[in-house]
Image 1 (cartoon, helix red, strand yellow):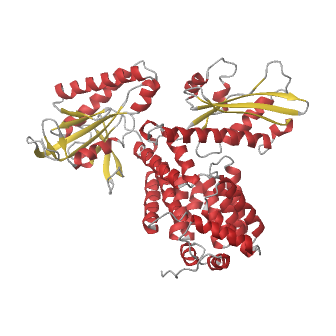
Image 2 (image 1 turned 90 degrees about the horizontal axis):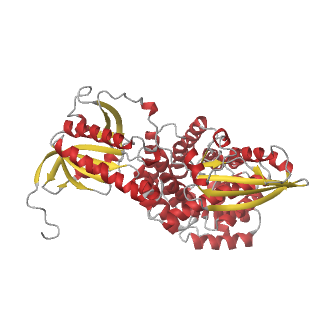
Image 3 (image 1 turned 120 degrees about the vertical axis):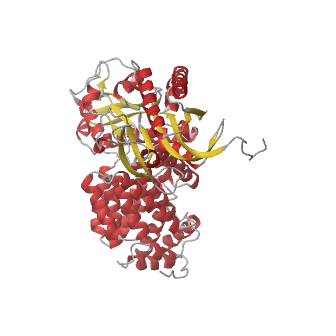
Length: 597
């Protein structure tokens, strides 16, 4: 057969296509390759026999760790799906939950080209995409399949609404399908998977034979748990759970298994006079590899203070080690082999590093994560942020296209979870930075903070919007609140950059210069910080420094003009855009042609 030529036996007709996928096959194989492969193969072989002999379907082909099936009508396909899940449960009986082989199944009915060894058409692709919408042990069917079933007789159908799937522009209407005897889960109980990595902070203990204040190790442990738990990208195991393992001789991987955590923090302490010495280690639970080890020394009273140098230093070290380890894992392995929590943390870190290569890698990681968790709002919200950053950094060749993409992604995230504080914050960010509707932005930020008063990004972006309004004093207060709530954020340079903008709005040019320089020490490529620094230096009378900063700014953003800056600034109504634009021009930024609106 010539390349591109179709098999002669293909016929066109209405078929029901089912895609059966093994959930987390990569993770299972990484944990125990031989046993996992044997269990996966045994389940799929059993499934093939069941499809052929009992439900008169056809196994068209194996696709990775999945099966592509064809049936003549929807009812047989759905009955088969129920039987396949039951077969998986039977095989998993007595097996540890982490080692179970589970399925998710998608079913779609469409006109396709069908032959002896293949089946082709848009409907085949859609079946596999629908399968990705299913949770562990679930079957999700299209509206075309649901229309061929009698609800309550053939099984139970639960409407999941219109969902977006990869490579399909418009959302598709889908339903969860269950057996007639299976209890129907309430919609409110169906929660998306948690993408955050989990961290266990074990009780700190004194060195053997070392003198130490009674209970000081527990105080340090509690302070670290309190500080780390404020992160919106890391989940921290409760002290009640970690304390239950106190005194037991367990390896790092055993602790990880018992507490279902990916990282373990442990520590020892000793005192010398009034000085407290704390040695901390961060290890990856699965391998036992130590990611970071450090000894910090401070006064005994520092253990009692949440924001002491001792606690802040340990928190920064722990968080930095986890972030760096996840970035290394995501950049040295192919994305399909990277754990979901690793993809999330790595993507956020790479996004904020603001190098073009790493920035593109961030999008690839987020897209891979979104495909794995299509019903989770978090990947969509961060993808919206990614598109906005392209505009802010001056990297976008089509700002309108990126802005509309950010708007669509933020609202798709809200369609999945209208109470997601992260999605609400990103929607507000779109209104601020792209649509320049500060009133709408405020409504989103206020809604985010109503749902989660500890959402640091909402406080940060609310402060940013207040800066554009010209209310610098309130803006500074909001941003300081954001910093307090997120002491270990990998994008700390971004917080300092927005603090500089708020100080600029408040007319505190020296503080704006200090905050902008602090931001640039952590990330020298952040063009917003260079812009603020140029303006603050010019307005404070440091004209020579402003001219040097402006020239460096132009090397990072060659197309920057004053007219372009004013056109895209949300600070038009407050008059700040024109004021800051004049300062940029006086420092040497080209005027450019006025933009028509």
